[in-house]
Image (tube, rainbow, N blue to C red; front, side):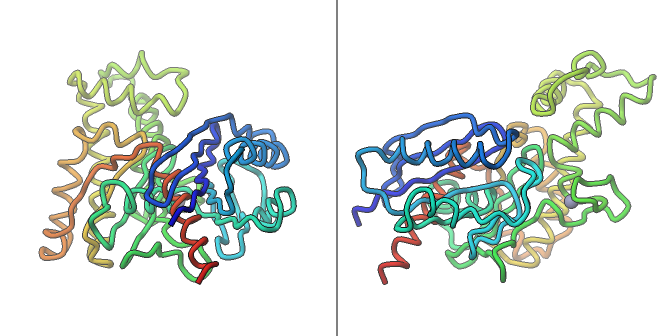
Length: 323
Ligand SMILES: [Zn+2]
């Protein structure tokens, strides 16, 4: 197979992508600002320019695009993407076909699903057939690969592991529900835990001085550093994170008997501070035999997971068209 495809990962800040061959080698990579906060038209302009630039001089017929949101991946529609865009039921695939030509095959997928496929294809889970990936960022994304196939569900919306309930009366989640995994294991969750802790004026913690007026993306790193320096309140936060992850993983392993659970995303940089709690909690709750065989691993592709996953889905649509 000599196919080259483009894998793209759209985020709230950056639009990143690469030209990738069928073996998963990244041949060329580019990054621009997504400017998603300026509306869908601006984002589409940036995306079409990006695709034209990166494919210059190459014959590319297939692209894959990862987007944070609920998508109808089969129909190529962004159903809801509240974290980046105020759009509902936006027909991304047909818009790209209109702008770039109807011959272009466009695969769209939720960004966390793409990251799961990336780690399964080229990363930590490349030797297994069934895996789950959790991406800990501002929220918690999830993706499920079963028997070498991304599990997308009936309408392409499966894998929202961040919104399974961990504590029925727990903290309110951005989705409107209470006690979701995302409310306990994301940057948003960590910011909430810090804020709630600091309301106790007697609490002695280094975070009182260091977390004021800090961007949400930087909070996990500050709490990680404070925990590393022995701040007991910060250490407790990571135990909360680890416990919630462990509760989720126990249910997921009981349900799906996967070979591996991969954990990635920026918040997972604090791995050493939470993974022991996660491991203990998962083993305490799950059935012994499937949990014993399920490896819990850290993702290895970092930001490339989503790009490579999108590229894989693009390659797959090449092959589907051909057969
Ligand atoms: Zn939720």
